[in-house]
Amino acid sequence: MTLCSIIIVTYNALKYTKLCYESILKYTSIPYEIIFVDNSSTDGTKEFLSRLQSPTIRVIFNNQNQGFAYGCNQGARIVNSNAVLFLNNDTIVTKNWLNNLFCCLNSHPQVAAVVPVSNLAAGSQIPVTYKNIKEMDRFACHFNKINPSKWRQTETASGFCLLVKKMVFDLLNGFDEQFGIGFFEDTDLIIRIRQAGFRVMIAGDTFVHHFGSRTFRANNICIDSWMNINNAKFIRKHYGG
Image 1: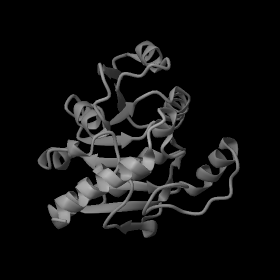
Image 2: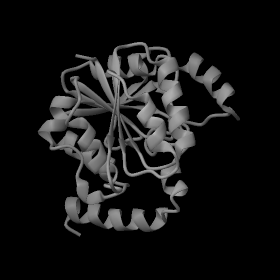
Image 3: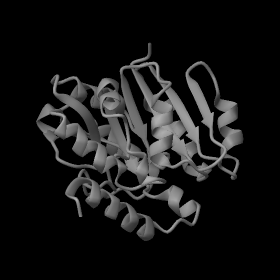
């Protein structure tokens, strides 16, 4: 059994998927597997992912865009580990990223989920000055040093890079698929994790770069429209509005 299963849902935006995958290979030292779930890409992503398949890289190909939440749940059903890392395909991971996240996750039995800090992430965003990927790598190399004093409990955070104990994810029946192609499914899950009596932490000693909404932009999906639709669903679910 691997220590961690990394689940990446893709729908076009091949350029960013390649950058994400290459960074995982470069900077992940603990045992892991990657499960890609492709939502019927048409830009060469399917062909790229087909070439990657191996004992530690598995790919699920959907015949249509099933949505982010569905894809994450689909991937989680076949993992071979006790922890699942949901990673947006428009991210670049950095030195020591997964080791640091696991240190935080294993710091207390009640900690069930951990997110890193980033240049672009609601709830865990920090100011940065780098101007390109090379500068970002240097920044993260100095930044990603284990420091428990930088860990903090949070009520909400972006799930662009979310490490979750598989037992807790299964207990809560995963992401709520009513949120469709994206937005608020991460906020909803984090709230439910906390309602179940567990802690969600921000690992302030771990940085992961996030481009942000690249899948939406690559597919000309109206971000504001989907945010409004899912915000209304979220309010009805949690506040009865």
